[in-house]
Length: 420
Ligand code: DSN
Image (cartoon, rainbow, N blue to C red; front, side):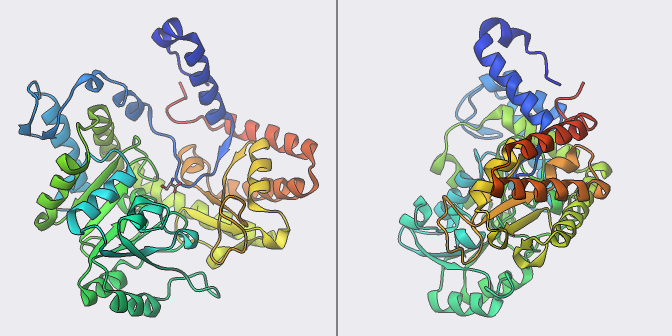
């Protein structure tokens, strides 16, 4: 199902055709990238409005441009909804995305050259948590913790020892490939002991937190950083949240420290997504995301897959394909041909290179948005199993068969935002 785009089709048929093709791809495929989702039609509409046309440097009531009678109300609404949903004293909804949001945290609490601590990228952390190739690892002295090789879990004794030795100004918890519950109280205790600011980067799990399917970092973390487009199911954007004591420092860091005018159309769409996330149906969604991931993990274990940490507590599963003798990238590309969209990913202690790693990362936010439930997870695991086997044998016919089976199931579960 694709949407009508009459003005775009008339003005730029070439681009309109590309948008239509992407809509079709998103409708037909089984999207398992854990950081992706489908926004509602309302979020999609809000992000394509005339709010696009307005410059609003500053904050509501304190702008550098006139004509903010409406925009101020939009931003105040988004801020109020974020505060109510997450139970925080302060929210800034202006960061353009997760990386700028995290960079603003550095600007607020550290000086170039200071020591910062986060989870190493190949262990499941994020580039902006002080990893070497990121500006955050070049401009700050990044020290990195990981997970234990035998359990795939964080060893808090090791984290504490490292933190007390290195005395970082900022400690990040959270990441991009963490299948287990983040122990915010344990991180907060360590941060307190070494005098660091604790930042909970909950980009992946913000929707689960909002829906009560993952513990909240409130009141443990000093700062909460999140994107708005993953499990939270909003537009591509980000938010920073904190207690009132850090409000000024964070606001100043976002603007004028790092950014110019906020993207008002995105702010509006964030407000809509936050409203949706406060509804009982979103609570049910968040619980289903986790139930589906657990069922999928079980079904994959039954089929002999090796899952980092042995399973999942959240929306995400990290698979080490070494025992299947198929590299992650080969598997990911074959699954893509089979209509199953995943990303290849390093696994902890990966002997292979990041661009050709041992694993794939999958998750259930998108398929849950399409109404798939635990009863479908055996079929999903079967397709992954057959797809990985076919990848190893370069069996294109098997991949084509899976693709048509996937398309049939997905056509019975229309994509939110695209259906209608
Ligand atoms: N790109 C995001 C993800 O896929 O997890 C992290 O920034």
